Image 1 (tube, rainbow over the protein chains, first blue to last red):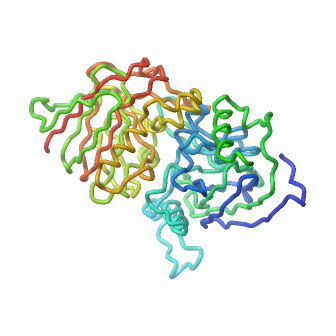
Image 2: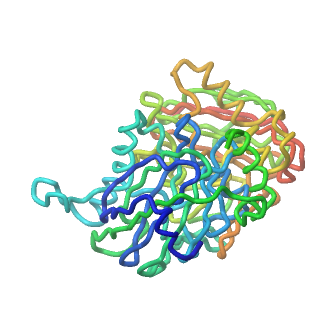
Image 3: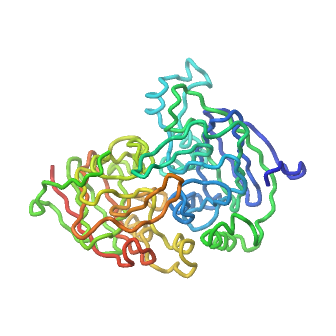
Length: 244
Length: 215
């Protein structure tokens, strides 16, 4: 669905400023569109089953199941329990990082200097790790629950010798990714800059969120049929919701 | 970073601990700051799934993402500093006669086997089962929440410039080893991988040996 959904399906819209952290429960049968408002945004994201938060997005299972080191349209975010938490049903950006990890307080201070709340109010410098821990705390989760995260809108490639290369100017203004939720999921995110972003200034960018009611994936769904592994992940998921 | 093979000067007869870990079994132990751990691939191309925790605060644990980001390279070898989730150096790889090790491929599990291979593979033994049982027996109240992205010693999981990831044939061989010096007191959690569905270990999980030297 590259077009905007019909107005009757839309549930709400909101903007997350750059450097902020956010969380919500996205229900099975809803789609979350994240839009890079200005270009150059980064969204560090973690996903958990709402029913049992020990079930969560698993980077390794997601990558080796689909033989990819990044996410784009057709891919699915696997949980550690062999299920599909959400599917990437649309993507105008083309590459979302899965290996770059999070910034932390020391890194942000080293790159951008110190900027405390006392002097800078809500423009104070935040970092990805503390932001996610902060948001996780609202659900009884914490440091133990920070696993390898997604970095939506960022691109990190790997050379043949293993060197990691951050690709600047990757995400354009208006680029978006649609995540269709296959399970009731806790979504936790931070809009801090990517830890490998070489830009010298602390300049995290905003993202727009839009949520709508989406149809259940049919037998011909492109994400389900992206590969045989995804078909089996959908079987595991649908057995968890046998009544729909 | 160097990918040259680096041998160790340490003499196995001086090790304070030696233990063979059969395929499909876990190993746990505490490594004191300054001690050196060697993992020896006895028969070649055996996956040794490994996690490290701060022995005094297990909520601080090995971070695959921070480790590869800080060194700017996805492969682990001599000179790699294994960083914690708090950005501190937990261990340093001091010798490596294999060449590189994976930290993106994760640990096999009953559930991931159903996805990767077939639904009826659920009942085969897996690394995450070994991890869970070892943590349950280890008196720290630790469990599945503590299973973050691990290291796969001796595994070769290349990523191509266009973003493809695959389990390639191993580059290890009988007698190859990796050595790590603890920079803090660490809890070591190993699963000697029982995976029977993957050609990377020639479908034949084999024993490894764990050795420890004092500083």
